[in-house]
Length: 103
Image (cartoon, rainbow, N blue to C red):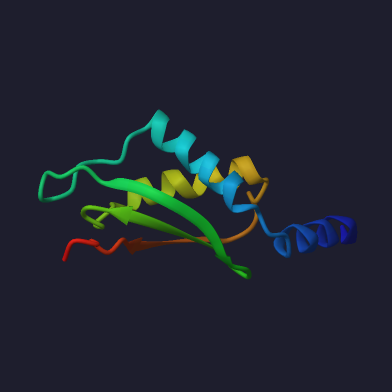
């Protein structure tokens, strides 16, 4: 039992490379597109990175509308957990709206 606890502790202290997270999120988005926003605009996921530990925090920069439904967030969370072997760790996904450079 303690062996499993130490393995989970090591996994929870690990940092995933940003390129790997972007690749995984890109594959998840390619297999299932984000839904349209309330304003009928496409949601564009631009960039994702790990920004914290305990719980694992993934910040995703989105363009356009940022009202992504909870069901799509659960889909991303499950996909990331399976790909990174974080199935038993809490993962928090935060969305950050990209600023428009032309405003």
